[in-house]
Image 1: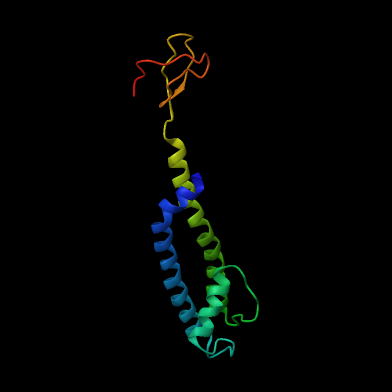
Image 2: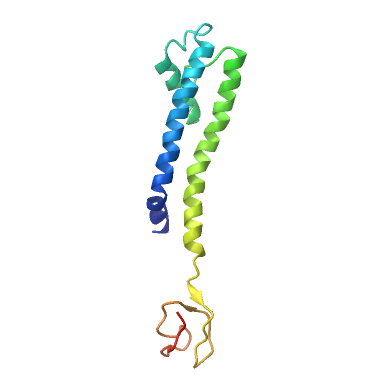
Length: 139
C-alpha cells in the first residue's frame, strides 16, 4: 500500500525523467548515426541508430548492431553506463517518497495515566498495555 501511494505521488517526477530519457535517447542515437554511418552499414539511418540507442540504454543489448569506430565505441560505453543510472533514478525517487512517508512520527511520548506505558499512537483512544481509556492525550 505504501509503495502504491509512493508511485502515485512520484508519477509526475517519473514522467518528467522518462521524457528527458526519451529526448536523450533520440539525441544519442542521432549522434551515433553521425559518428558511424560512413564506417558501418548497420547505422544506415537515424531511426536505426535510435533503435540501437534504446536497446543499449535499456541494457538489453541484442548485439545485432554494434559500433566499429573508436569514437562510436566510446559513446557506446558511455551510453551503457548511463543505462544503469537511468534504472537507478526512478528507484531512488520512489524510495525517497516511501522513506518520507515512513519517517512521519506516528507515535507520541504520552504515558498512560493508569499503567505509565508508552509510546502510544497519535490517534489512540485506549492504552495498548492495560486497555484503559486514554484521556487528555496531547495532539
